Image 1: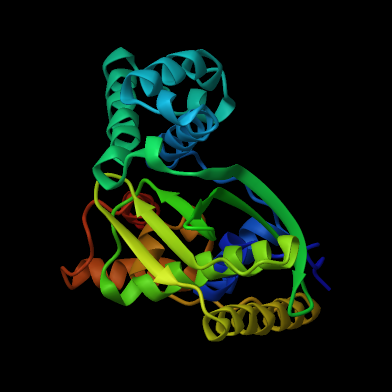
Image 2: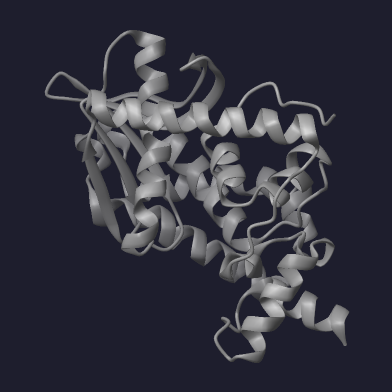
Amino acid sequence: MAELPNYLSPSSAASFEGCPRRWEYKYVQRLPEPSHQAALVGSFAHAVLEDLCELAPEQRTQDEAKKVAKKLWPEFTEDEDYISLELDEDSARGFRWQAWLAIAGLWDLEDPALVNVVSTEQKITTSLDEVPFVGIIDRVDRTEGKLVVSDYKSGTLPGSRWRDDKIQQIMLYAAALESSVGEQPERARLLYLGQQILDVNVTPDRLADATGQLAATWDSVKDACETEEFEAKPSVLCGWCPFVTLCEPGRDEILSRHEKGNFPSHAPSLALVTASSS
């Protein structure tokens, strides 16, 4: 019997729903994942925006954001994940520029000086529909007396078919906040930096849908851990799975799509699979 995790988070729940096999590699076997520049760019941008939004409203300017980034940068570059990228000087400069574009992208969406920030990086440990849950909310605001949950996204705005999953995740943050403070947020927002805000109303039905799906996922996690059967769900997303060389269905999916000419050439796992099969 595989060890059951102590809790689910929005990301771990989404990971299991996407592919239980990948979830097993990460959360049961605890295999290390290689660091990806895009993810670390997002991590640095999040850190800067967190510190910025803890300042007085009048200090939340782009000039101040540059000062915060400059202060945080030396420690960030000492992190093992950043070091593992092995960036040369030009690549490191490109990393900083990508991070700054993400940071500055907040002003394309809103003026943070006008936001009534209640908290940043608020960690909540609670139970949702009898599921142990842990989440870290990027930002909680209060607008016209009502709570608003905001989550920064430094990646590309997803197509319409993928948006419901993202909204489902932020609804879990809203449910967790309500469980913690006893007040239902009015809105939940996904801030795709430099692109668009996905803004949805928080309703009892949406919260019930999100927590109900979480409970169903938790039941599936328990069943999988008990039977030690973690189903692979091959899809185009296998091209972004760091464990694909360990997964025969994933390898076959990539090679089949690649041979048919309908697989993204920029997918990072494509090179791993084609190299191992040659």
